[in-house]
Amino acid sequence: MKQGTGMKMHGRRGTEEDRKADRKADRAARKAEWWARQKRRKACGEAPGHGGGPMSPPNAFTLLPWLLLGMGAISNVIKGETPNPWIGALGLLLFNSLYVTLVFRAFNKRAREAASTRWCLAALGAVTCGLALAYGGNWLLFFPLWGLATGAVVRGRTLGPVMFVVTALAGAIAGLDEGWDTLGIAYGTLVSGMVTAAILALSETVRELRETRQELARAAVDQERLRFSRDLHDLLGHTLSVIVVKSEAARRIAPRDMDAALAQVADIESVGRQALTEIREAVTGYREASLAAELDRARGALTAAGIEPVVRQSGPPLPPQAAALLGWVVREAATNAIRHSGATTCEIEVRSSVERVSLVITDNGDGVGSTPPGSGLTGLTERLAAAGGTLVGGPAPGLGRGFRVTAELPVEPAGPEGGGRAEHPEIPENEESR
Image (cartoon, rainbow, N blue to C red; front, side, top):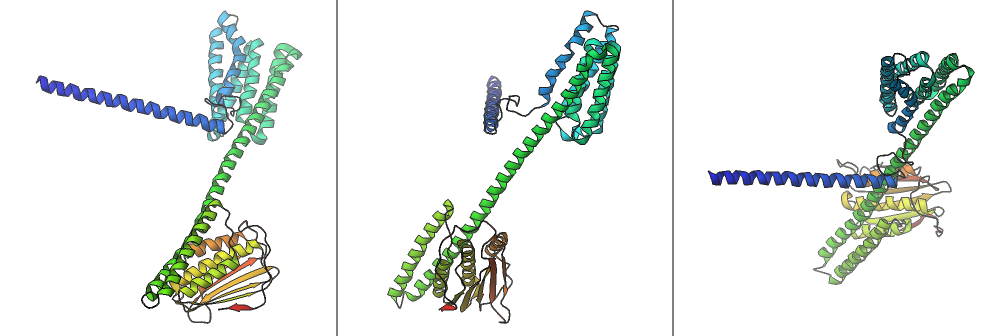
């Protein structure tokens, strides 16, 4: 029995130690979260702590110290200088409760616009007017507090008429009690309401601007991720397809022609090195696709895959932006022809004018079939659309088989795709290469 009891005690002690360790880990996690929150506040320009610093936006706690204006009335009740002090104390309790409720509701849009909040504001006005009519003197200082609560709760076009009514009541009641010497009460009521409303409206505008800036930053990051994924898809898809095709060619011809096989292996090495360079440039954001270079690469890749390339170019030279976008189209279309078409011929034609340029890539393969469009053509369609162009892919008309990709683009694209300006040599009319 003693041994069993000892084992039970040991088990309880172990459980307690586990609980202490859990509580310690929980405190450490909360502490780390608190420090992270303070760092975020500092990065956003807010004061560290709980949001009450000079650089932090106003909140309900910043409006509570104004209740000190009622200290004179509280002193009158405590010293017994107020008739019916129990009624005065009840009025003070009711006023303070309504004021605190209103200032906390003012910083929640749904609560601020609720009908119950309007009724609370009306009740606060009734209590303020009743206490001022009954006691006067220091009790008139509750009017500026009523104006402050009104400025915190009421927004928009209704603020002006409501503040006019509140100020008029403050001036009339104060005038009945103290005469013209209490015009400062009316002025203080108007100023407290309008200044509070202006500060809170400015604070909300600043907060909305910060949220908009954060949303724009997130959108820019998402756009950059999308661009990067498209570039990597185009780069790796084309390069890996060329490597696979050349590897198959080297394997087929190695038994009968070792020199030709070694030439294919050398091409594979060259393509791999070029791919490494392009990926590094794409990661750093400096890669600029060249239409001439992509046409040369497509010609070599198609030839290695057993597809006869026919490339035609006509028209004036293209600016780098348009050439870069069309270079991506050539790369993607050639990759798709090598992978999926089973074609024997692929024609690439570039026609440019002063205003627009068109690129047509046609193969005599098996066509679309039942395979849905890939992400490469979908991404290129979006990129060209952003630059004011179009990209259409589908069965080649009039051939009975094959696939055609047609891209049209303004000579000066509207979007940010592509690189900077550079000089291009003049392209002769109807130059054809096989």
